[in-house]
Image (cartoon, rainbow, N blue to C red; front, side, top):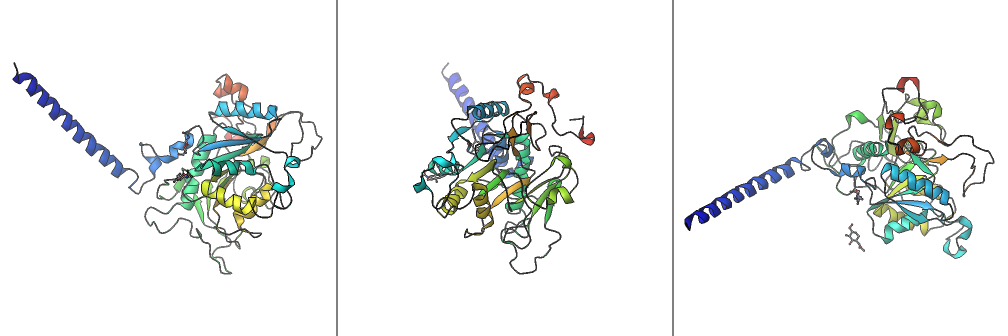
Length: 391
Ligand SMILES: *[C@@H]1O[C@H](CO)[C@@H](O)[C@H](O)[C@H]1NC(C)=O
Ligand SMILES: *[C@@H]1O[C@H](CO)[C@@H](O)[C@H](O)[C@H]1NC(C)=O
């Protein structure tokens, strides 16, 4: 009677140790086959950092929305859009220009937008996305950001096969002599055949960036004679890109529109960005930005200062890592009948139709459809024959 339970206890022990050994080897094997191997982490079924872009903060640690407390209309709009896209965010109170006490301003004027950057430093966040309160985006934003991350990683992560080099031969330090190797053909990577790089470990967007300038109203490809890496990732047939006749920007020439086919998206380093509807800042970027923009003479608008920062001009240090995409992924939404904003002067025109430039499946304009769960009824603001139907 006594020996039976002991035997069964021993059997249980054997079974448990076998299970333990099995689990141990299985997980070891998986760890080896995972990040250690020279394959793109996101091609594996196992979880990777890039999957975090689908989380409620888009792969950043936080999302801040800069907004004046008095603009309840904008706050309501943003809260609804964020809920429909499954984002979590925090409002950061903007300060209207005239309320900033003079003593707080190094030289002339200081923009309210830097509040988000201070938040990143004070709360020791690894990164945050800072949005203007009138920003709108495509329903497919998470997929767009995921693809953006594949592109930034291809540009700034070391190659898996040769960890001392990068796919972009001009990264991290472009040639400084007077004959840039290929003024006419900057290093171009095809989005559909990106090189295999070492997986990022700090941020899904890559381990070495200061700013990701995601919403703008104009951007150049890097000029060949600047100390900015020249590489670009080009994606043809991106169905989220509006037809060329709807693309615009304040920068001239608009090379993406003038030299690439319809529905091309580009990812590259920042040159002469205009407007800041959305930008992400890493902890390192926030510290550098506060030093270079917050503590030095502030003589220009915030977007111009961000540009100086990224390009290392006007007394700012070189070598900042600022990446962007054309067209921008976040754009200003202009509601019906409400011209102007708090920053610029009202242009006086009454708008008959709400719109968001260059965003095809606008979250804001499809809010009613999304609330009803009728994704098949989503309205494309900028359809064209080729890309109509089929989805
Ligand atoms: C989303 O992913 C980022 C990057 O890994 C992480 O820092 C952040 O905490 C995540 N957000 C949430 C809400 O889990
Ligand atoms: C900030 O976070 C980093 C890791 O993300 C940590 O090493 C550091 O100690 C933190 N600093 C403070 C002041 O909490």
